[in-house]
Amino acid sequence: MLRPIDAPSPNWDPRPPGARVRLVVLHYTGMRTAAEALLRLRDPAARVSAHYLIDEAGTVFQLVAEDRRAWHAGVAAWAGLHDVNAASIGIELANPGHEWGYRPFPDAQLEALAELLRELRARHRIPPSGVVGHSDVAPARKRDPGELFPWRWLAQRGLAIWPEKATPRPVDPLRARARLLALGYGLDAPSGGFVACVRAFQRRFRPARVDGMLDAETMGLLEALGGQPPS
Image 1 (tube, rainbow, N blue to C red):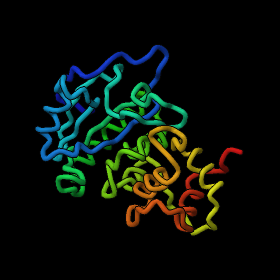
Image 2: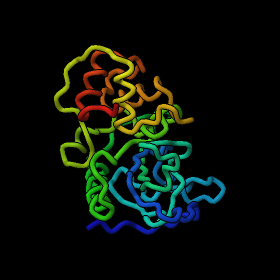
Image 3: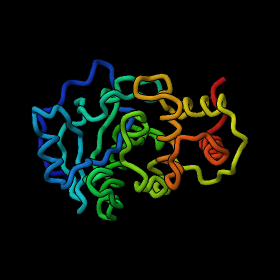
């Protein structure tokens, strides 16, 4: 069982009555060091936080109790939720991000994340589809955890979803829209839009080419990630 280091942040408020944890949102810190990120996430003036921060050595810090709403997702939407913070646990992974020298996530950091996710899934009954990226819930604004994050590695451990068998399919924008909605993307939310959601989907499931263009390969990946879209 993980024993996180207690590093309380003042940046939280109560979850709304009746809210339950349905999602885990993964972020990268986008700062030069984990120490800088820890300071910012605990700075009252910054008004940002997360429940957990994992540094590159695999040390886990708990900033906000799980029964409280941390301020990590911002303007976001997923599966009809427009207050993502109210229904989620936020995890920050120390990584400089695209601005400061984006790099692969170390094994120690990923192993700590996997252990934390196993515990969170057990406590809150979160399905693999409920583990998402910041770019999934805020596709028009965010890129994290980015193209180098190993979603397939998580999926192989039962901690996320991944399209193992996908073949190119004819491009069908209406069907693609239905598939994106079925997966959870907020196409009509202020944080979304069709092209932004396609780009976020590619960033996660086809990171080698993230262009926002609905092509046959992207269409095949969409089809491989579930049953029939809603009518």
